[in-house]
Amino acid sequence: MATKFFLLLILLSHHVVSSLSEGCHPHDKKALLQIKKELNNPTLLSSWKPNTDCCHSNWYGVNCIPSNRVYFLIIEIDNDLASSFPPSIGNLPYLDSLLIYQLPNLTGTIPRSITKLTNLRSLTISATSISGPIPNFIAELKSLTYLDLSDNHLSGTLPPNLSQLRNLEAIILQNNRLTGPIPPSYGYIKNISSLFLSHNKLSGKLPNSLARLNSLVVDLSHNQFEGDASMLFGLAKQTETIDLSWNMFSYDMGKLELPKSLRLLDMSHNRVYGKLPDGVKNLQSLNVSFNRLCGEIPKVGYFSTFDVSSFVHNKCLCGSPLPSCK
Image (cartoon, rainbow, N blue to C red; front, side, top):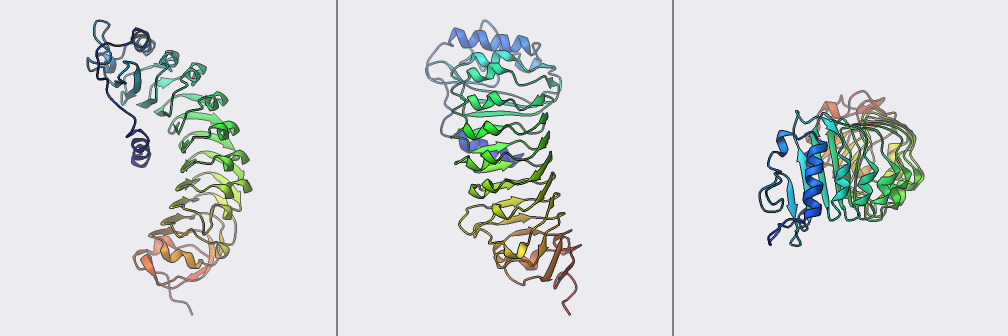
């Protein structure tokens, strides 16, 4: 969670500004009060009062730009708020960033009205009880750079048309109930720096188009993927973290060319075979346990700090911290 919010802060840091003039646009004020009503007037939003200024009276979670239009909206951390997702959120046309987080009794599906937020760059709906599929109409949010729909009850397959979002930098869909394969179109999302799909029920083989990805972080762990994942590696890539653990991947690790930038690699609990490649010497964190690897464990770099848990349950790995090679 800390990683995700760090990414979000980077994306927002140069854009969130406070209103410097007086007055709250009546259209936005009306929309906010309707959102409050649709959320069943929760105590969390008690500061949203009809006789006060939504831009200058410390309305919870509301931030405005100098033109007095609502630019940033955050509603988070309330176990008592109980309602379906408020469709009137689509009536804030200048909204740049929407963050809805840790509202476990927020239910329903993502409404189509959200597509009216044509200026939206950052969308976070996380740790709620919203359900249903990730709607294809998310791809109509052409300004979107950050998409976090993690820790919900979303089901169905990954929408292939997310590749139409040319500015998209982060896809965070972990901890849902998503099924099926990764669409080949995901290899063509040019600016993607973070791909988090872990803890779902995704399956099948990875499309070869993922060789085009040059993301900083790729996390496909705790799914049901199988076959080859070697296309995620390569000397020319800038990737720093790859987590493929708890899948059914099967390929020759010895043939991998690891990115020189790679610092964390977790391939534990798969069916990977071969030997450890030379590039592992640059890693600061490694877990290849519960695979089918062989050969001697290197004595370079951070390897002296890796304990037995990084290497156990392989076919014939040997050398410290495992028993010595004969």
